[in-house]
Amino acid sequence: MIAVLVISLITLVFIYIGYPISMWLAGKFVSRKHSVTPPDKPKVTIIIPAFNEEKCIRENIENKLNQNYPQDKLQIIVVSDDSTDDTNNIVSEFASKYPDKVELINQIPRQGKTAGVNKAVKKATGSILVFADANSIFDIDAITQLVKTFDDQDVGYVTGKMVYTHSDGSLVGDGCSAYMKYENHLRVLESNMGSIVGVDGGVDAMRKELFTELRPDQLPDFVQPLSVVKQGYRVVYNSEALLKEEALEENKSEFRMRVRVSLRAYWALLDMKILFNPLQFGLFSYQLFSHKALRYLAFIPQIAAFVSNAALMNEGFVFTALFIGQIVFYLLAFYGHINQSSSNKLVKLSYYLCLVNLAAMIAFFQFVRGKKIVIWKPRVG
Image (cartoon, rainbow, N blue to C red; front, side):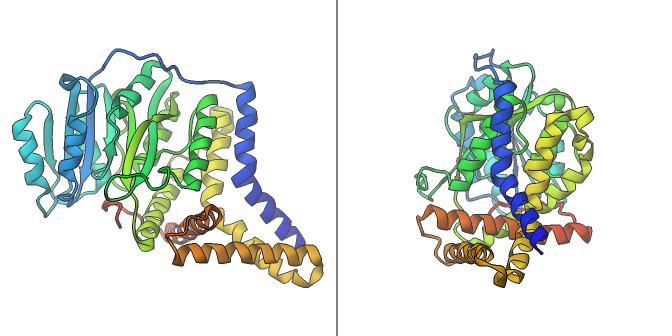
């Protein structure tokens, strides 16, 4: 039992602390910071998948039309996944007013987000594809920031920074949770030395020539960046490309979303398993294994650490203290669950770590049973 406890704790420490330190150290020897010299302004196609988004699609399109980017170089394609509300009529209004700029694709019957993106890319006239969710509101310079990153010819995919807002548009705190700050810092470290492993999905861009048509069950936010790495290009993070997204108000909405994302991530890792070959992909294989595979499986050492520690409670003070520490951690997480308004960073971090790991565990069992998700649902759950 002692061996199980030690290995479990070492694994958890590596996942959340050791791996970021290794990236920081690697950056001391390998530096691949992308250029920030503004390039020429290429044509950009913004792709917005939508299903029953009448409450936010108008604001979204207006937001994209008002971007600080040459208006004659913007194309907006909204793919409605057989929406049954007023989404299509709203988009059609813009298409009538801006026939050379806004286009509606009505996907009938429902086939999901990935199938919709595949259809939109076939009609895209821009050399740069920008992906936005139906509820994603970009900062006015977001597209400019995304596009200028491609001045580095090695960059094939760019993701921006998501900040959470209240319903009135004001930031939730500074816009980032402690966990988001941690992830964003890790993305900076990864970008500086090569490629990042994960993207937000709501404020992304890629070279059209690198786009790979995916199966309907594949998660484009996960598989597409990995496909870009497979083709020999970099995936980087630009913290100046800001996405404002309203925070989820209900625990169950956040949890369901995490389960869906985790399930599709497992399938994505299986589909792109070739990237785990260090002889072919070098350091990125280590990143993918450490940052994604181990992270999504962190619930295993987490459970093993608790169970083995409980069995060793009477074996000495150290084991008792460790177990008490774990109990305190889970109590803080539970308090964060019942008190979402808590501003205590330790409470919020404990709660979020437990939430994502529990979601990953449930998704893993669904993955083992062969379950796949094709039909896309809005982020609100």
